[in-house]
Length: 245
Image (cartoon, rainbow, N blue to C red):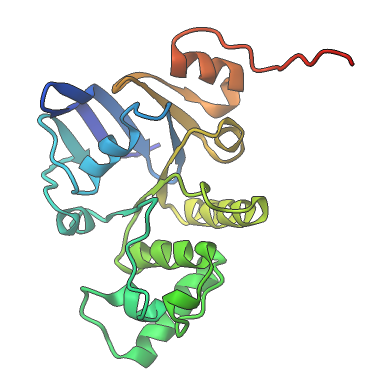
C-alpha cells in the first residue's frame, strides 16, 4: 500500500521539555490510523506539526514521497492535509456554508451550498448549509469542520479526539462517514485514548508514550490489553473485580 505521509525522527521541544522526541510514523493511502497514548503523551503536538500549527525542531516530513516544509495551516492545505481540532474554530453568526468557504475564493453562495451538499451526499454527512452555527448541536459543528477540510481538497485528515463530546449514536455515525472517506481513498489519523473505539475503527495503531513512539501494530493483530501495556509501559489489569455482597 502506498505511503502518503511519513514522519522521520520528529522532535519538538518547549524549553527543556521534549513534547516529542525522535518520532517515526507512516500513514498509508486509504487507511485509518489511530494515534494512541495517555494524556500528555504528545499526540496533539505531533499532529500540530503536520497541520502547520507548530514547526518541528528536528526531523523531516514527507508527503507522497516528497519532503514537505509545513510552517502554516495554509502550507498544510497545499499538501492536501487538514486537521479537525478538538475545539472547533467556527464563527457562530455565520452559516455552515459561510464557515466552510471562509478564507477561500468562494463561487457564490448558491453554488457553495450545492458544493457542500454534494460533499455531504458523497460521504453520508447530514448538514444544512444555510444553518447558523449558533443553532447547531456539537455533532453538527463537527460535521461543518470536517466538510470544511474536505471542501479545501484534503486527502489526509487528522481528527483530534473527535468522539470526546459525541453520544454513542453520533460516534457510530461519524465512524460510518470515516469508513466512506477511507473507501474513497482518503487517509485518516484519529487521535484518541479510547481503546474500544481504536479496535472498532482503525486499520493500524501507532502508540506514543512520554513523547516517543513505542510501536505501530495492525489492529486485527492486537488487543486492548496489549495496547494498554504499550501506552503505560507495564501490564495493566483491565478487569475490575467486584466483591460479592
